[in-house]
Length: 404
Image (cartoon, rainbow, N blue to C red; front, side, top):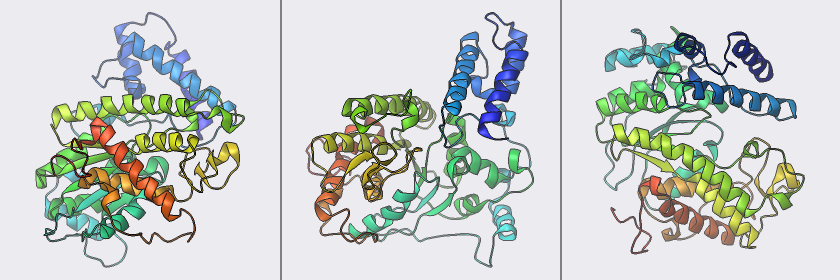
């Protein structure tokens, strides 16, 4: 069922089951919660009238957007009710021993590779990283290792399990790795096998629509069971056209103030999510502030301080060298440098401005040029130290995190 039909179906179900009534009974609310678990906005396992009404309005808004020609990743989707339970099904791979998890992955992986990826502890402070993610994370995953190498560190290649759109979300990958819910009986524990059988320092994720703390807590619990010192980093993505009431007719509408507002909306969502996780796991979960970086980048553009950049959004302004390249919000050419710099600055607590010389990223030899690349390094550090959720501060402004 495509996204448009799914939304129409849900709206019909909500009305037919009385979801639109102003004063439903507690019994009705309990029934709706079972059928529409995403309506439970605060995740407390109880559906209120206000939450039910807000969810209905959200679906109606999604329907309006689907009829005005918008396309992109699904924002409303079914989540298995099992996520509301106190534990996952007994056959979830996470409940097996490390040896059993490795044996399961050995059977389902392609090729004859060792099912366990393992690295000795780096002596230079490099991080051993596992991660999930989607296409918004891909540019950073590509450039991040090159940046770390240029900084003089011998970081092992991150072990990732990624996918496009929703298939790269933390929830989806947990289900896929464990062989539960939509992957019932078909586990692919690519990350779980190595996490349980080797030492790791950090995990990274890309966000997705309607994320809940539970989608990340399961990963954190599993990681800390085997690597208690691990820390966790969630990219906050960046403003998208879908946040606006309508697609702008021209880039004149894409003001710096507009992006500040959209960035604040994103920050509020992530502040609530990361705050809930850090209540359970103090000082363990941090934001990779790519949103802050892109909001700053728009401000730099409006001040004429991005040499070589021709526009803000290629979908609106039709300029190839723009900050964003399509309606969904993928980054424009060269912006993967900026995302990688944000990853590096957050996880290592050092400004990319301290890196000597140029970095061979590949791609166009003339864009981004050296001058623009240096601006990206500056923006990345500014974004990281400005965002309190990054865990990085630089009070003495020496380009090194105060705790490093």
